Amino acid sequence: MPLFWIIVLLIVLGAVGYVIGRRKAMSSAGGDSRVLHSLPGYYGANVAMLTLVPALLVLAVWLVVQPMLVGNAISHLIPERVVEEVGSRDLVLGEVRRVADGLDQAVAQGALGRDEARSLSTEVTNVRDRLAEVGVALGSDVRPEVLQAAQRYRELTASANVARAFVVLLLAALGLAYAYVKTHQEFRARNSVEHGILAILLLASTIAILTTLGIVLSMLSETFRFFDLYPWQQFFFGLEWRPSFEGGSELGLIPLLWGTLYISLIALLVSVPIGLFAAVYMAEYASKRVRSVAKPMIEILAGIPTIVYGLFALITVGPLLRDYFAEPLGLGTSSSSVMTAGIVMGIMLIPFVSSLSDDIINAVPQSLRDGSYGLGATQSETVKQVILPAALPGIVGAVLLAASRAIGETMIVVLGAGAAARLSLNPFEAMTTVTVKIVGQLTGDTDFSSPEALVAFALGLTLFVITLGLNVFALFIVRKYREQYE
Image 1 (tube, rainbow, N blue to C red):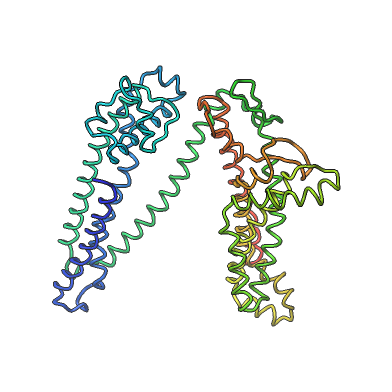
Image 2 (cartoon, rainbow, N blue to C red):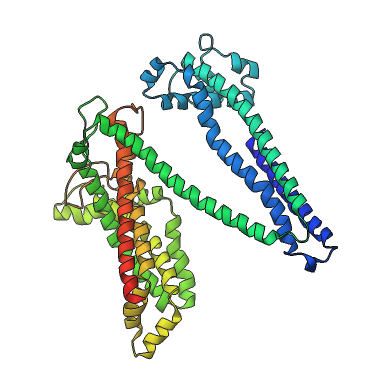
């Protein structure tokens, strides 16, 4: 059964559970809701929750575990010779999944029969061309071993899908029956629902933490593989970035890190003053009419795609800076530069700083303003000496968010700053960032077992550590000023 219909059936069962649970509670109370321990809606919600939540949890775990178990089951069908040709077993399994998905799509569109898909052979059929006919593009011809593994993958996946539908729906039905039996007028349905909601919130927090941990561990494993092939001293302290998949690469981090921090600094120098001043004006000085127009206009900037900002940098800002600043001052002749990317990125970050700072300034208690005015302070003195210090934790959070956004930006840098990895203080020269090179190293026909491809994971881990450092620094600043003003 398709996943969509499983979810639909679960929703229907949950709705049915809510209705019959509520009705049974009212029936047990003789139609008088005052006799019930909880409101009638809690009884229905309890039945619906026990119907949906366990089944959805099992379904979510099943969706994560099933591909791994099926992949392990077919792994023995892939000989080491194929693994060595491709670069890693994970890449081969990824190719197997793509072929299996292509066969499923061909069967769904009627291009292949079910029996034909099971008996398909590379000796008599060009599988790549057959799948291309239904819109499935493969990078290379399908190996016989890969096709055999894909066919076995389809069989195991189909069996697992049937078992998944049976187990999930059975669990939902059992949950509905159990909750329905427990429903009576003295049952503490409200307590049960509140405990269930607390458990769901705790689970959501745990998933967020485990997701972060999983990302870090996956990055660490690939980074260690990279450092097994390339010296860490040359990576962290190297001053040259010249990758070559044919050998002889120099993969020094310093030029990329310099470009990242340089562009981010210029972006923050543009966005933080403008965004903060705009927030102070809208929160403390602007009338309601002006605020109702100005705030949405500023927030529109956050909805513009980064590719549009990149084109703006490439077509407008870059040529202007080149013609009116770089060339007259003898600092460069290219429209791609650190200054171009930094200014445009700063414009993009203005709403991040402005909106968050505006909200946190408005959250400062009015009593602080009244006390300041009562002591004879002017409005500007109140803003400077009372409101901004009180709002500092939120403002630091806004600046941190803007800094993290700047460090992770790619498209504006590609179109506005170029792709040159160099060390220079000239803001009108082309440079690049860590994120741009991560994309570059993983794009195209690359050998994922080579240091030139694995270096992307080391670069990603470096960005994670930088962002973590920014968070720690922000917490230090916040705690320092909280002790002073609270």
